[in-house]
Length: 452
Image (tube, rainbow, N blue to C red; front, side):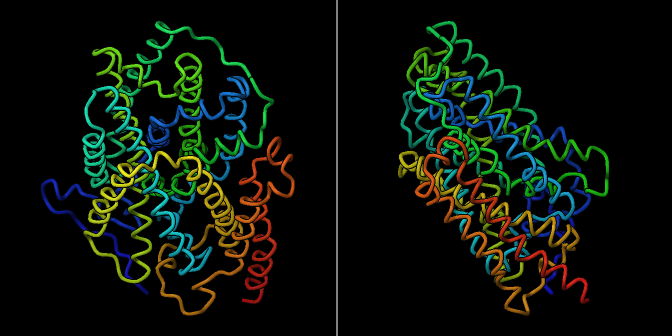
């Protein structure tokens, strides 16, 4: 079995603050995050400069139905997100290490590679929005801002979750003030009226947009944060830990989605920060707000991207101390290059791919963790070298996942009206994948328990 000893001690000085735990279990001394701190982390991570885009994407449905769709999206995502939050507290490992028992070691390796690039894509997408927005506000070249924002984000992520939580906590008020001032600018200088519906509400497509943009796109990353929270053996605040990530994520979506919709109605552009381009003082406030919004969100894209890459690397070799910071720097550079190359121009297709893949992956994994593993697998078991074909590949999980993806991608061709107007297709695909896996794996697991 591979060693899973956590790093012992730290170097002095600034290097001693660089996070090097990688994919290993987080030491108990570092598992101190409270529900309140976790809420702030996810509130700020979700409050991206791109989050108001939801208001533009759903503009034709009107503000009332958008708000209801956001609430329904939270109800769909609250249980999966809460279970991943508890997973990290029960076994202090990132979700894709736990996926080794769900999908097999080789299966988890492939997902780790895939999600490394998905998160790096989000990093590039948000950096692109920041660069173009700050360029418009300051009238300076966008490429300068791409590299500046990219460098700041890489620097922060090098110091890991402890210092990221500090950064989120102490800059959250500044972010709220900046966007509050921008909202005041919008309502005081433009003719603002309540956006009404201009097209029949299509609940399936609206909820799909929201969940793939927000809560279910974040869900599998939640345990990457909650592994730093107080262990599940500490019963204080169990309900609060369960709800904290989803409340933080969706509160930001609700507020910034409304802001984006009102900005779209009043100015023709969802990006509220661009209002600062027309006045120097407002521009400084807008620039600070946008920069913080992007840094907050992108830290929670680059950090999981790094950890996902380390899961893949750990499949073929033992963890080394400095591979986490090295991976952070490399992925940060690549994500910034994606921003420069124009990933923002392909946002719709990118979001579709995320929902089609991540939601079935997440739902199958949760069935395995809760009803197959019964939350009992010790941390050391996830690092054992596979000795059987079943340990390398869990075909029941992979086939179930594949069915879910097929439904997510092509289900609308079978019942297009149903999945557009009523049901969110990726969620349906994820649920069917989970049901298939449950029917396949749970009875077999129960028989193995009885036999043993």
